[in-house]
Image 1: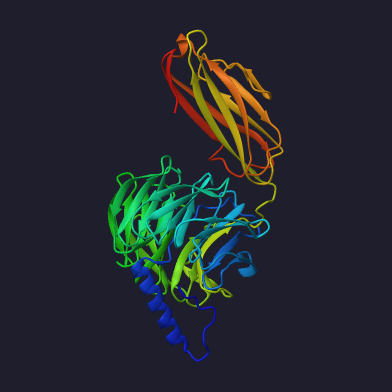
Image 2 (image 1 turned 90 degrees about the horizontal axis):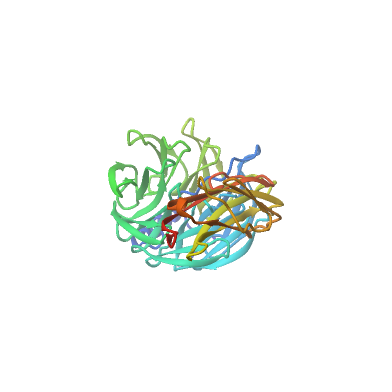
Length: 477
């Protein structure tokens, strides 16, 4: 792909616009670059000054840093060739950027705005999304038929999933259990079980599907059909399309507001954003934006949606209360993907991700279950202290407690010292098995205290259930 970093002065703006439209339309039709709309997971609640937006500049090989409090570009980060998609980790510590012409993903430290890692993936990576824990990033490799799964703790590809032809967009359900991938050259969506990294269903949708977003409730996934001028509404409980909504020309990306009552669709060919009432499945507003909007994303506050206008180098800010553009930000070079983080990503926050595993140790004399209670620090700061508890079933007791753990009745309390960013600490204990323990044995771990502030609650607990058929026949997941 040849990239234009400047436009010859002899070309009229109308000619340039037409030429770039033909180029992008051809690429979309071939599945090479359909300008995906990936629903990034919301960052934690923003500081008073507003969140920071990261915008990928396809023609500039950079990511622009935007202060959304003033809607001005405050910095630039050099990444790989032709950056397209952007996603921010749930802790707001890192931004991940797909480099379309380089087959890599750049990892940006949002505290320093520097690239700290470059991860090789498949050909022409386009859309990407992180799971709610931030442990894995799913990357659609549009130049082939695969999705690369990046382990964000090691910045390496831990799995490669075969999907359809020319995967474009990726979205992960709020539960983290399922990922949805649009296959641009097959008019299908691949449904991935994230626990097994296996495709469990392939759903027919409209022509040339590009963007996908899962509703906040997880009940539906909206798919923009770039070649069909429609949005397919996929029922996630049945993996079937329940309805199809007509929108504008070449719909390319979609996002939801916080409540899920409205969906916003970037119509690249119509130079506007359609607003859909999700209860009625009808378009209730059309908002004119810039030239060829490629991507839409709702700001964490919910008060604005940002649309990237690739052909005129601007980003439109839409007021969700009035469905009107309140500001147009300039200074970009082919803006595509956009994602948000907090204004102060490292202001006294360190997220603890709780994990719990069990293993049976069976013998005639003293059968028992051994447990490992893990505190993983997903950052952005180092943990100075943390306390996790484990709740045992009624009648159970804990033995062989690791240093730092105590037991009182059916509660095990473990203290953890300092844990560096991206590091883990383990504590172990045993639960002896007796006749009273036959049947399900469920143990739940929970973060009860940590410093500095933990910004998330959805990964503060973990449970594991073993099934004891006898004292010598026990299975654990």
